[in-house]
View (cartoon, rainbow, N blue to C red):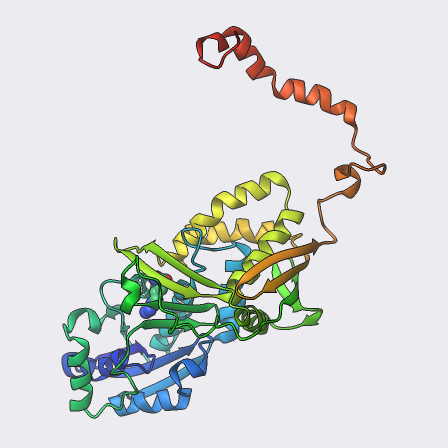
Length: 407
Ligand code: ARG
C-alpha cells in the first residue's frame, strides 16, 4: 500500500515541487491542503482554484482549499489581542498564529483521508518547521512528518529546473527576492537586502502600509470583554474589523516593524513586518485595559503576556502551559468592555485620543483636583507613614553605613 501524505500547500514553487518529490522519493499519494488564513489574493496574484489546479498538475491525488479566515480571526487573533501579544515586545506573531490553524486542518484532513503522514515546505532554518511539527505532534503524536525542503538539498535554480522537468506550472517565481508570509494578521518579509541589519529596509516589498492619503483618520473601536465588536459604531465580524482597521491604519503608513529577532532555532534574524490592523487593535485593547483592569491583575497580566507570545512563537500553541495562561487571560477580559478612539496621522503616527468604559475603574471624583473631589485626604497621612515605616526604620538604624545615608 502506498503512503498517504497530507501536504500543507501554498501554491508556491517549493510546495509544488514537494508534491512530485514526495511521489518520487516516498511513493506517496499526495493530498494537498491549502488553508486560507486571510492572505490577500493580490499578493500572489492568484485565486484558490488556480492553486488547486497547480496541485493536481504537480501530481496530487486530491487538493482541498479550506476557508479558515473566520477561524483565524476568532480563535487565534482574538486570544492574541487578549494577550496583547508581541514577541520580544514587537512582533505580533503573524506567521506563528497561522501555523496552528493550518496544523489543525492538516491533522483533520489526514484523519479524513486515512493518511499516516503530514508534510510541509519549510526549510531547516526557520521557526515554521518547529510550529508545523510540534503542533502536529501535540494533536496527533502518531503521525509522521516529512519536510522535503529540509532534505532535498536543491537550490532555488535546482527547484525551478525540477519544476520544468516535471511540467509543474509555476508562477513568476524566478525573480523572487523576498520570502513573504501573509495572513489576516499581517505580513512577514525576509531575505534580500533585509539580511543586512545595518541597511535600511527596502520600501518595495511593503503592500499594506504604503501611505495613500494625506488626511488624518479617526477610528473608534469598541470591545466587548476584550473582543473587538465594532468600528465607528458599526458592528462587524472580528475578521472584518481586522481588515477595516488594517486598511485604514495602513493607508496612513502605520504598522511597520523592523527588528532583529531570536528564532527558536538559535539564529538571530533581521526581519520586517507590516501589521497595521494587528498593532492598532492591540494598542487600542491595551489602552482599554489601562482603564478597566484592577492594578494587581493588570501588573500580573503584563508579566504573563510575554510568556504567552513566546510559547506561541515557539510552536507551543497546543500545550498545557499555553492552555492555562489562556484561562487566566480570558478571565481577565471579563470587564474589558468599552470604546477606544484612535487618531492616525500620516505618515504612520498612531495616537490614542480617548477611551471610555461602563466598567472603568477610573473614578473622576477620586482622581480630580477640583471641587468634586471625594478622596479622603486625611487617610493619606497614616497610609504613607506606614508604607514608609520599614525604610524609615532602616534609615535610622543602618542608613548611616551607605554613602547617601543620614548625616
Ligand atoms: N520570523 C517570523 C516568524 O518566525 C516570520 C516567518 C515568516 N515565514 C516565512 N516563510 N517568510 O514568525
